[in-house]
Image 1 (tube, rainbow, N blue to C red):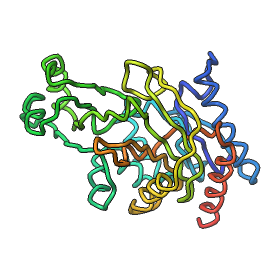
Image 2 (image 1 turned 60 degrees about the horizontal axis):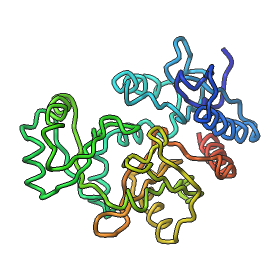
Image 3 (image 1 turned 90 degrees about the vertical axis):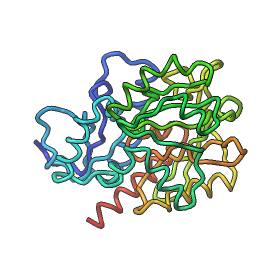
Length: 301
């Protein structure tokens, strides 16, 4: 096997898809933009499934996560793979940043450092509590429940205090195995949507506005949500860059998802460091900025 400077990590569904639809086409286009930017800077690049059997990761100097979107359904396998591969190649973002970002408890850590987040309560495995008790304790009527480790809206539910019994069984099953996060439903999700600001090398590059389809609350396009380019305000850009700077080590790239909380204030919904969709198709030059950051990282190593 030949040596490569960098591997662009995907999952088996997108490595060489048989059926090309709009969804797959966007993935291939954006990975191609990153690959061309890297190759244009003289680097040898391979695009590969992170779980590819028999692949020799010691033949790759760096590996960047791009569309490893099956990791949340294969979390234990993915975690073991990361632990193994970190000794063979350098991960982008780093292994330490990835393991920290996998668990949404990071939100409370960032809140302790001055980042505004929506009200949030974590329910830990085997904790003896019901949904009714939680809603009564926090005086919440409409909420969203989701796993502390999740992607793509896995086990994400919109709850109402009048129908909690419909979800009690699944909630009790989930907290036997994993931590869960409960937050009050944000009215702005339905009216304004969610912002995603891309930050590369510590600097804002571009943004999109995501909106859920009518009657839904999930902004992901998997569930019919829409996405469009967005011109953020100066305060929104400053907020996003502050989030990245607040991390113990600044990541090479990040997607900062912002919402407006129920007080009308800007708040961090998610900080995506592992495999975020970065919408390079809306701003191809951002792929060049990412490539520049990788080149600089390689020079330092």
